[in-house]
Length: 250
Image (cartoon, rainbow, N blue to C red; front, top):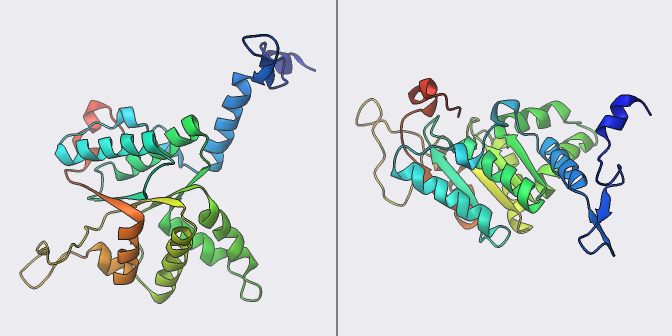
């Protein structure tokens, strides 16, 4: 054993991962072992380097909707796994949807031992396309298995891809599979929600309107999302522009 290995050995458990408890009559897991497990689960969660700094304490609300979104996130973490469903964050680019979703994922991994996974929906579709085997389709199954089975999935940028038949089928398969297995999913989307007969926001004239999440994922899938998730709408200006000089990162 070289000097570096000696320095890295935990002095409390001497590298065994177990240490005596307070009574001295039994043993318990050493803190170093617990921390290694957390680090392993964080690496396995595929959180992009750009967002690894995200924590709930560093989300700084600038209006009421952002304050509510942060409180929803904190409540979700406190109540997990006894939650009724997942979350669907919607709002403009840069209001902190991804920040909150990843902060929730990280906190649940660190504090409750959750096994979770982050995917940008566009990246997931590309991985599926690149791995597809027209003969056995085995590679596609391998890409999808962790997405379908993980305890907590964060699916970022839902609806970002054009709603082709293949995209619709893939979204439906993922969402329905997790719904049927009662697994929790957190979604983010830049597209506004459409509720009943609510008027559409105008866009460049009275005959045009902004695309909604329903337009991007379809009526049936949006209906499924109502069953799976609590809608959390966030409004405001792009954080990336408005707080860059303050030193915050979103």
